[in-house]
Length: 60
Image (cartoon, one colour):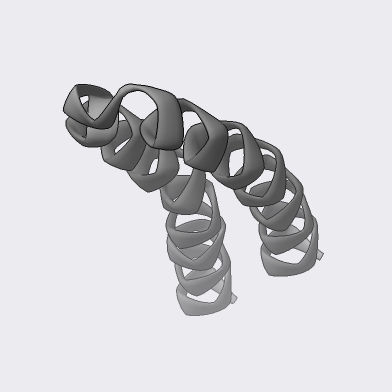
């Protein structure tokens, strides 16, 4: 459940940020770094969910 919800939220965030980021980069290429940082933060949500799931499984 932890991984599923985290991946679902991460996928939604990456889809929204990715489409908006592509529009931004096409108009202002100098903002590419910021867009990549925002995408990395959104993808981090899935990694945090995976870490929490591993921690829960190790405790059982």
